[in-house]
Length: 280
Image (cartoon, rainbow, N blue to C red; front, side, top):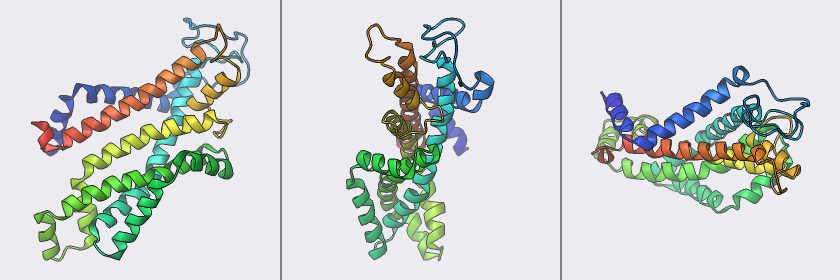
């Protein structure tokens, strides 16, 4: 019954449904990339060709199909997003739950660590660490996740503090239910809305971060990603030359924008559908 109520509330949000559709399309592109377009490699004979029926998004400076690059870039972007979310969730959710539930020195220490990480200059440190650990796409994803967990922990902590003061949590303590069960069964389920919203934001931020790192030359040059496509276009002068092959960078930038917008819309829709007050 609760899942049906959630679904009914979610589908009433048109922007949320639009976000879900966009995310589904990109997810399909990433998972079905080998069946949609061949992996772009080597050299082609049709260099800098504009969009056509043969090459939907045109070709780049090596004669490779830009549509194939975008499709395989979606696969990489999804991998980076999922890895970053996994790292952020493994660290951030338990840290937020404990710091919001525990009132003593344990909660204060974790809260202090969260505050320290939130004050760090993320982009410069991310660039330095990515340069040190190497340009593997997995390394980049882990680095992004390591800098994404504090915001998730903060949201989890604030929500946990509100729920932990409710009567049903007090009743659970009185009947002897362990703190572990209270945290991960009773509290976590009741703060699922804001946590899921923050996770969708991490999904969107991960793609922006990976694109930025790849554009700066810190991504994996052996793997197609949306940031790698933009870097190759910039290095070839396709962005600033006049006239320029606009299709080389335009479609990639468009998909990055759609990815970020759709995940934000999806997160907002989930939050509103899980919030009883927002359903009315």
